[in-house]
Image 1 (cartoon, helix red, strand yellow):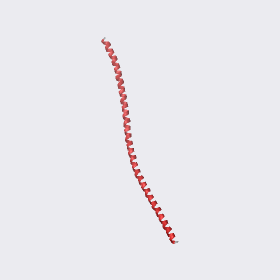
Image 2: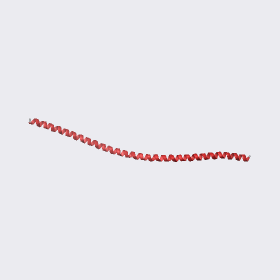
Image 3: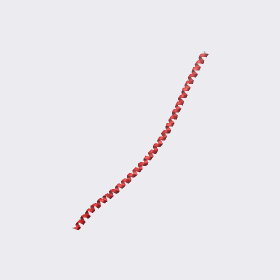
Image 4: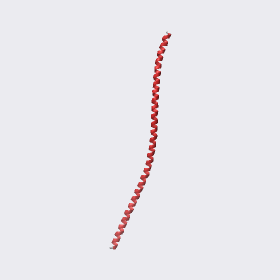
Length: 105
């Protein structure tokens, strides 16, 4: 009977030892998963920073483009005013030309 309880104690001890080894292996795997996630997380942080910098640069470019469009609109308005002034002068020139021709007759 003593040998039976001794062999069952050995089996119980070996089963406990195997479960402990499995838990240790599982914990090591979990720790490595956590380490991988931390490494990935740090890379994603770098990617987010790069994206933020690129966005800030694009915002500056968009602001410059908006300013250039406003300047172009002003230039267009000034050119339109000048065109109208030239057109009016050309119409007056025709009138003056007619008067000169009338004076020559």
